[in-house]
Image (tube, rainbow, N blue to C red; front, side, top):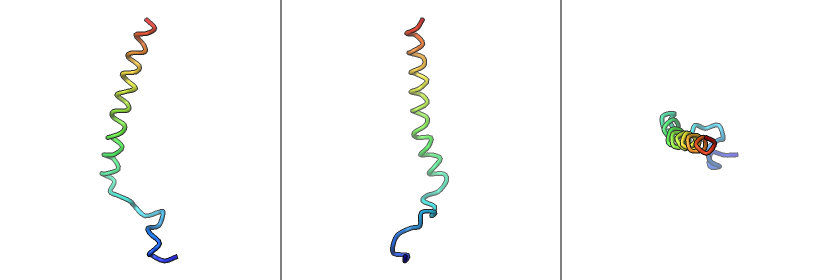
Length: 46
C-alpha cells in the first residue's frame, strides 16, 4: 500500500468542534421532536 491509496482509516477527519456542532445540529431537533411527540401523545390518553 502506498500513500496514494488514500487516508488511513484511523486518520482524523475534522476538528472536534465541527464534530460537536454537527452532533448538536442533529440532536437538538431530534430531541425537540421527541419532546413534542411525548406531549401530543400524552394528550391522547387523558
